[in-house]
Amino acid sequence: MEAILKAHQAEKWPCKVVAVISSRPNAAGLEVARAAGIPTQVIDHKQFAGREAFDAMLKKTLEALRADYVILAGFMRVLSEGFVNSFRGRLVNIHPSLLPSFPGLATHRQALAAGVRVHGCTVHFVTPAVDGGPIIAQAIVPVMADDTEDSLADRVLAQEHKLLPAVVRALVEDRIAIEGRQVVVSGMPTLVVGA
Image (cartoon, rainbow, N blue to C red; front, side, top):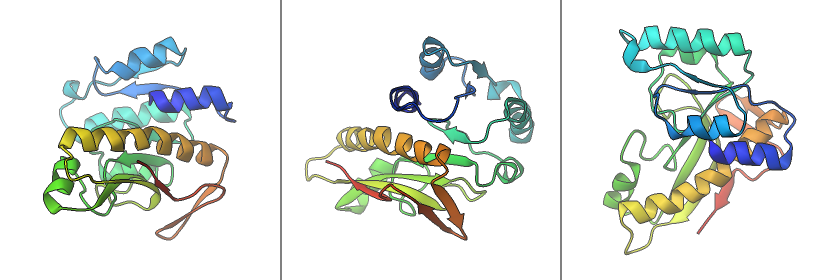
C-alpha cells in the first residue's frame, strides 16, 4: 500500500486515492495513509458476527466512497462470493507466488518444499475462487540453493512493491482489459524478472 501511495504521488497518476481501509485497527498502513493525507477507515472484522456481515459493511463503505477500483494490498481476508461479484473486474489482489502455483498461505515454504527454481508474485483480478482470478501480471525471482523462507520472501516482496503500483497505474490509465479469462495489458510487460 505504501508503494502504491509513493508511486501515485511521484508519478502523478490521473486518479485520487479516496481511502485506505483496514480490517485491523492497528494496521501500520493506516498511519502511513494518514501521514500522506489519505482518509482512513477501520472496519474491524472482529466486531461482526460473520463474513457476510463484515462484507456488507465493507461494500456499503466502498459504494459510499464511489471507488472505481479496490486494491487489496495486504488485506488478508477471504471475501464472500456476493462481495466479490459486486466488484467484478474492479477488485485486484497481489499474491506472493506465481499463480496458479501455491495459492493460499505459506507460499514461500511451499515453493521451497516443492524445489521450484523460480518463485515470485502475481497480481490478479479477484474472483470467488481464492487466488484463482485472471492474472494481470507476474514477477519472478530465482530460488537460490541457500534460500530460507525469509530470504525468499524478501526478494519476492521487493518485486511486489514494483509490480502492484505498475498494475494500479495501468488500471487508472485504462490500459487493462479482461477478455474472458485473459487479461490484456497495454504498455507494460505482464512478466517481470527480478533478482
